[in-house]
Amino acid sequence: MSEFRSSPRRRVVNAIMTGLTWVAAVVATLPLLFILVYLLQKGASSLSLGFFTHLPTPVGVAGGGVANAIVGTLVVVGIASAFGVPIGIGAGIYLAEKKGAPLAVGVRFLADVLNGLPSIVMGIFAWELVVVPMGHFSALAGGFALGAMMIPTVTRTTEEMVRVVPTSLREAALALGYTQWRTALRIVLPTALAGILTGILVALARIAGETAPLLFTAFGNNFWSVSLNEPIAALPLQIFNYAISPYDEWHAQAWGGALVLIALVLIISLVSRAVTRSGFARAVD
Amino acid sequence: MRSTESARRFSDADARALEALPARMEVRGLDAFFGDVHAVRDVSMRIPRNRVTAVIGPSGCGKSTFLRTLNRLHETVPGARIRGQVLLEGSDIYAPGIDPVSVRRHVGMVFQRSTAFPTMSIRGNVAAGLRVLKAAGQRIDQEERVEQALRRAALWEEVRDRLDESALGLSGGQQQRLCIARALAIDPGVLLLDEPTASLDPISTEKVEQLVHDLREEITVVIVTHNMEQAARVSDQTGFFLHGELVELSPTAQLFTRPRDPRTEAYITGRFG
Image (cartoon, rainbow over all chains, first blue to last red; front, side):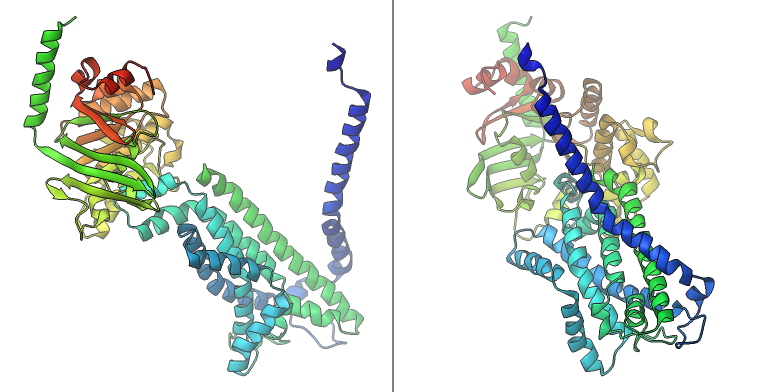
C-alpha cells in the first residue's frame, strides 16, 4: 500500500505553492490599501463640513472647499451617461442580436480599440469636435469626452449580458407572437438588466476619476456653475490644479479632494456589487 | 387480449374517425433545411381538429424541426429555410405577405425546458401574450383571461394566492404548466408541445399528460416526445420520423400494435433509437 502514502516531498512543494499564491494575493491588494491609508493620513485633516459646502478660495484665504467640483463632477458624469448609456446599450443589443453580421464584427473590434484608447487622446478628440466649433470650453464638451469613453464598456457588457439570456426565452417570446424588437426590449433587456447596470456602474466609476479628457474640454472653474454651456469644475481637475501648485495649503486641499473622489468611486463600486448580487444570479439561472 | 381481427377493426374505425374530422392544419411536401443540412424531407401530414397528434422518433430525426415549421419558428435560426406548404385552416402560413408574428398568435408553443420569464410575476407571465394583443388594439379583460388560462392549465388553485410573486418560485412542473397557461391565454387554435415533460419528474409528467388529454376537446395539440408510452397515452394519431422522413402516420392504437412499416416496428420494439 506504500504507493498510496503521500510523499513528504510532495507535501512540502504543495505547502510552498500554496504559500506563494497566498503572498501574491495579498500583494495584489497592497497598492489599494497603501493608497487608502496614505490618503486618509494626508487628506482627512482637510475634510470638514466647509470642504463640502464652500467654493475654492485664493491662496491665503482659509476655509476653501470643493463644493463646485463635486457638483461639477456629477453634472459632467450625468451628461456622459445621458449620451453614453443609451448608445452603449443600443450598440450592445445590436452586437448580441446580429453576432456575425459584418457591421457587428467591425463595431465589436472598434469598441475594443476604443476601450484601450488613451484618455488624453479622447480629450483632444472632444476638443477638436466640440470645443473648437463651440468656441469655448464647456461642461457639454467634458460630458461628451467622458461619454465617448463609457460607450465601449457599456456596449461590450450589454452584449455579454444579452448573450447569456437563453435562446429559449427569446423563442418563447417569439412563439407568443412577440415581434423581434419587442422580444429584445420586453424580455431580453429586462432579463439582462442587472448585469448591464453593473457594467454601467463600472464605467461610471472609471470615468468619474478621469482627468485628461477634461483638461481641455470641461477645463475647470473656480466659481459656481452648472451651466452646460460654460467651463465647469470637476474633482479630478481641481485635484490636478491644486497638486501642481506650489502652495502647501492647496496641496492639503488636493489630498482632501482625492479622498472624496476615491470615496465616490468606492461607493459606486459597492453599489454595483449589490446590484450584481440582487438580481443577476437569479436572472441568468 | 383482443384477437388480431378485432384489433384491425378497432384501428380501422379509428382511422376513419380521424379522417372524418376536418383538418386544422395540413402539411404538404415540406422540406426544412439548416444551411446544407436537410433536416425534414418531403413530409406531408394531416392534423385533425381538436385531436392530439404525437410525433416520435430517435434523436436528430427532425421531429422538433418539423414542429418548429408549424409556427414559423424554424426560420428564426440563421441559415434555416423551408420548402413546401403548411396550411392552417386551409391557408398557407408560408404564402407571400403572411406575417410570421400573426401566425404564432394562432399556433402556440411550449418548450422542453421551462421558459417562464424570470423578470415577470406569475400573473405577468400569463398576461405576456395578452399585452401584445392589447397593443394591437384588442379589448381584453386581462384579469379574467389570466384566471381562465390558469384554470385551463390546472394551475389556478396552486397559484391564486401568489399571482404577484416571481414565476421562478414555482416548481419545475408548475413552471411548465405556467408556460402552457401562457400559451393558452391568447387562445390559439393549435398548441405545439416540444418534449414538454422531458425535464419533469413522473408526478409532474402525469399532470401535464392529464392536461393534454383534457385540452383536446377544445384545442388541436401536436406533441413531440421521446417517450413512446407518453405518445400512446395522450395521442389520437402518431407519426414516426426517421432521418427527416415521416415513415408512418397512423392512429395511435394501430401504430403501436400493428405498425405498417417494418422500420416503425423496429423502433417501437426497441431494436434501435
